[in-house]
Length: 465
Image (cartoon, rainbow, N blue to C red):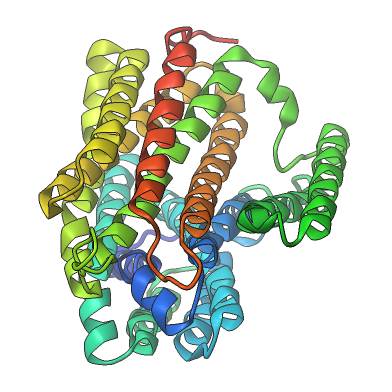
């Protein structure tokens, strides 16, 4: 028997403000690694491939946690799950702050990845406690504050790491997350579960997908050393195939699969997934390579930038990314999703090829990264919107969930391949990769991105399946 649920309690500006503070704090904590990655590589004696792994583990964890968090929120209430998720995030931030070496820092980043599930849960809480009109405004405010927090983290991580230490660049935003979580717990009323009797969580599918992604990242990280460890790499490839096969079999049979693979048979969905994955590969290559190129010593072919300068150089790209969503929405309404996606792919491919050809001045990299961030936002926003309107309303969550998973896979693969290229392009006895390694990375990403135009031109607008 299903219990009668009490109507949700209305919330005021203070509760929404607490969610906004939490969004700022988590956005800052999420963004500190990218501008300081060269510094972390030096202090922890990491190879480029290990640095690439560090930059993506949070995102991988987030992709796995987000669908589980949504189902747990439906079952137990959004506030209860949000507070517990943020407890895990705070533990991860403290582990990262105290980490003496790479394995411990990786553990901290894995735990911090739970923060990716916090933003959707915040939206659930806002919708549960506010009328429709007010909830739209509140969701926009929380989303904007998360982006603002990311920009603040990008700017502040370098000065904090250089003036204090790398430990404090994790500790300070973690303290802010702890404070904001306590405020949310105090000011936000409990929300009744929406679907307390729904099907269980697909734990076998979650575990097998986790194994698949982790093994894939290890294969890509070890690929440059295939000559010295061929048996290890071969065993990992076999293990990867086993994980993929097992995961596909479990998802086809699960009553409530984490990822409904049957949805991939629909052209609107698989085309969006392919495009999302390829576009995110194209985006992730400069996300990893550009900070590395900034940090290359100035007496070679680089700029010798420190973490503070790298944060400043990356800021225009962060601003462009924040503007891309609204621009994409306006463009999709006026010209259609396919036109926006095609334009975004063309801009990204051109910017990547331009970076390969011209990267001798700081402004070359700043402008190139800015256009790539803008193009990525245009494409991903339009693809999510296009996918949502190309399937039945009841399938929207499943279809967009598939796009999310492929987005993470594309980003992770691109970063790991970039790290492998730099590792393979670093001469023995040197810490500086050959300039040709950066050129290879940019050209490869540009070529792959350009090829995705073949898929984009076959997409249809709003076709119901």
